[in-house]
Amino acid sequence: MADIEKSLIEIVEMYPAVLDDDKKLKSILKDYFPEDKRIQNHLYMVCEQGILEDMKGATEINKYKMVRYIHRLADDYGISESMAKEAIVAWTKALKIKAEEVSISESRAKQNQDSIIDGNSAINFEIEDENTLHFSGKEGRIIPNIKLMKGTYAVKLKGDIFFKLVYCDYKINQKMVIGSVYREEECIFKIERNIDNHNPGYFEIQNRGDDNLWTVDVVKLD
Amino acid sequence: MSEVIARPGGELASRPLHFFWVVDCSGSMFGEKIGVVNNAITSVLPEMIDEADDNPNAQLLIRTLKFSTGASWITDSPVKVEDYVWEDLEAAGVTDLGKAFDLLAGQLDVKQMGERALPPVIVLLSDGQPTDDYKKSLAKFQKLPWAKKAVKIAISIGQDADDDVLLEFTGNRELVLQANNAKMLAKMIKWASTAVSAVSSGVSNNAEDEIGDNDSSSGESVIEDGNKDTGNAAVPSVGNGPLILDMDNIPEPDDAGDVW
Picture 1 (cartoon, rainbow over the protein chains, first blue to last red):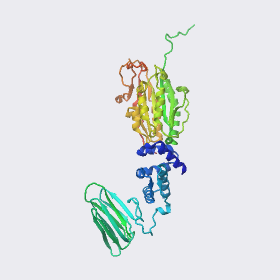
Picture 2: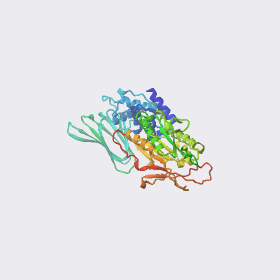
Picture 3: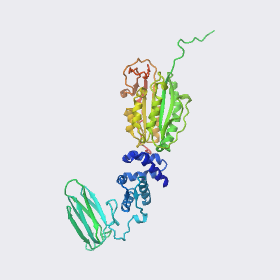
Picture 4: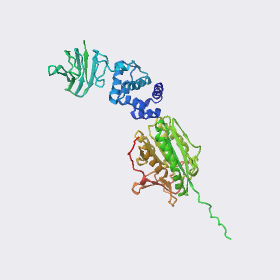
């Protein structure tokens, strides 16, 4: 691992232009790690997933972001989380970014905890803290397989969109719509029953306006 | 008693035909790629000797330049093809193509090449992206009279090679050959080694002829050397005799099997 980090540091110092050119980066990774396609691929994946671009300019990365990055690689490429973590940590060291330590056991969030991020795919959300699901886009979206523990939530919107949370309550065999929120409103809603694999839910965002970026924050209050 | 009558004028003098292999030896060439290059060039040398025998008016001289982190010549000077022994190259390091162009430019000096030489043949093999500032070195190289007259062929190895750079080098898309697997690489090396032959038939000097123009309708490209009066004392005076480039028999791309 130390050799990989050392080589990556050398690449960043001696050939910084490759960070802005995917083809050149791929080529130089092949030059530096000729006998190890796995390392070439794992390091390149960080670039291919946009994580390297995301990292540029950062001085530190919190553990939530680290978790998100690890999940993104592991989920999209079918690699183990430890391999994903290895690649991401190598890049943080090469870019001299202070990254919060994340243990692999902690990275798949524990289902028993009340954190809003538990069980929700890191691919769909930017996770800045453990009580907020933040996502954005330009077009309408449906984000499936939402998991929310019972409690009180706030939804804050920016942009000309219409947001709703829909889930199926199989106990009463009914589709529930909670918290329809329209254009830059903020609303508070309560969930009486856990939204999870038994009662799966989804977020629906309808873009009512133009092509500008919209954002949604779902914050767990208690 | 018979006597040997000496021919007036002595033996027919041959003109040097310099053939350069410029080989990417960066880390990405490690393993199968550099192995194929080594084997293919080794096995094509006897054919090059045979071709040279069929062209008595040209003295084929081989020189190999390798580049990875830095660049260097394998031999101190050009070697006659019949005496040339291929040394297996190894692959490690980055891709300093610019340094290769710098060394090549040094060799294409009129003093090094001589004035009677035929247009040199340069075959560049690469599978990646240059890691140094190659553009300045390439521009400097391309200004040289011998570089303008040279037959420049590039073999693009694998799908990650920078074909734009190779096209800048050859100036001709048809002479950027794709080799995406071991079989194609060997075929392309063989074609590039034997595609150029010198013909001694009398062709008068043609002023202002462009070197490297392809007349693909005939399946052959005639590379005519001519005296270009540029007022530059360093411009080589190459006299008569075209080179023929066998464009008709460029191997067809074949991506069957493993693709790099």
